[in-house]
Length: 362
Image (tube, rainbow, N blue to C red; front, top):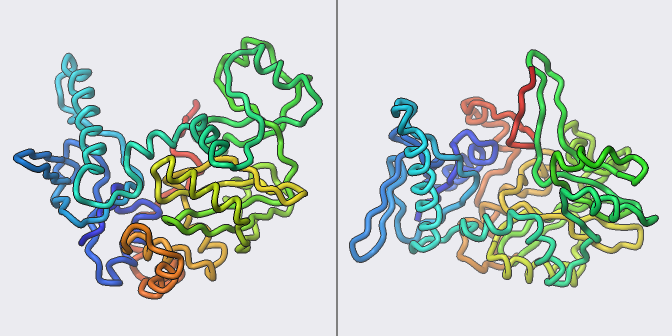
């Protein structure tokens, strides 16, 4: 068995986890996604059964494939201009063929590509969360000005957030502007036309005691409280500045039951869930990221050992228990071990941006 990671080898999670797996005796192969260069090429063969080669290695029965961060396909830049649209589409469709075929090979996929694409949809997340018995704040997703104004006409406090994170950077400057959740009121709304510039998510505000980041590993969940000095509405920016305290907390039985029901319905084994905990101790589901970052938990609190827990989960059979995970996690070096190793200095540093999408403005 080898571990196949669909991401570049210098990805901020791939590099430390690949090192830790190899230190524990596992073979690891990384593939960044379809491209025209040799390391990013792919071959699918069908002769009674399906076979797959990615770059310089094959995907074999019994392998574990972690679909960490597949990158968009990159066609050969030398293709003739009149053929560019055709080539781009061929690369796009072949890339999808590779990704969807993975879950039909005799390998374990974390997570299946079809499930990951479906659950990446915010509307589907809220629908499944409510169906699974989790508390979900009243929400409206729209680009219709009348719907926005109608949503904000009552006395309940509301927030606005984007569907997807984005970063703006001014050319020649270090200044960044980052999308984040903010409180919004009817008397602060712009003209109707402005409300049509970009759709948004408008949601009833949970007056929080604190936030929780939960990591799902198969049938096991680990929950951690997140507290910021200024009780920030959106803690992500505070994490980036190191202004957060983290502590493991017990997951209420009904919440754990709901999350496991959610994961079964969604077809995912792994994900990072965000909850807002109100002043009465109720857990409100906000969102899940099935490719979610988790090593930052170890960076803030090395006693969490999320790196080792994840690798135990990755290398154990599907359905492994919490006891199985915590017994096997001792086999792997920690995030702290990685930070002290020469391997960390040998990997080009990846910028830890909140969003993968960047606009550069003149």
